[in-house]
Structures are given as C-alpha cells and as structure tokens.
Amino acid sequence: MTQQLAIKEGLFTWPADKPELLGSRCKHCSEAAFPAQDDCRACGQRDTEIITLGSRGTLWTWTIQSFMPKSPYLSDETPETFKPYGVGYVEMPGGVRVESRLQLNEGQTPHIGMLLDLDIQAFRTNDSGQQIMMFSFKAAEE
Image (tube, rainbow, N blue to C red; front, top):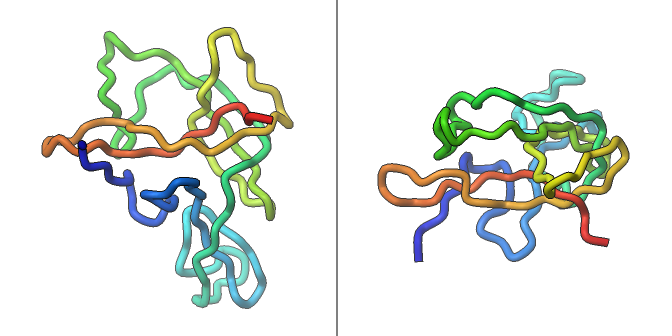
C-alpha cells in the first residue's frame, strides 16, 4: 500500500476512519481559528489549545477558481489537464470559516447554506511515491 501523508501536519486528523479538521481555541477569550494558531488573533494571548472543528459544515460563500493553485497546493495537474473547480468558505460548528476546495458532481451548483462533509483525498504524489492527502468538502450525505 502506498504511504499517505497529510499536506501539512495539524490541519486534520490523519490517518483516521472519520477525519476532522483541527483548529485552536484561545483559553482566555474562546476565539477559535483555522488553521491552529499559537497566538489568539482576537486578544493576542499566547495560550491556545488544539480542538477538533468537526467534519460537517455549511457553505458560507463560494466561487470558481479558474487558475492553477501555487505551492504548497500544486497538484498533479498540468496546464493541459487543469479544470476550474469550486472554492468556498465552509462555516464549521462554532463559527470558524474554512477556505476549501469544493467537490461538485457533474452539473451540481453549490448554494449558500448547503450542508457539506469533509473529505480527505490524495492530492498529488511526491518524489518518494507517497500520496499527499488534502482536505476538501463535498455535498453532505443526508
């Protein structure tokens, strides 16, 4: 089996049967952040803890990205194989908004308020043959 690595340690639980996003919460003012931060962006205290943000959120806003992303989000796509894709802000329980790639089914149009589920997928293969795993969101299965 090919080894799988998270694109960046601490973004989501991995490996996991039911992965969840990871963030931080300030122990002083309870402000939550994604990705996890050592310093609180609201009160400036340096006393945060790692929390799980869950695996289901609500689409807050979205757009279509029509250009290839830059590092570290370069995929195995080439300019010839690149296809535009949906990008949105997903509001997680507790109010943290996470920017993410959206997985859309053929003909599916996202809509604000849409329930979305976290999905971890192979994003690219590195020079050592390891699959680099990245999070995205897809329409929730009711």
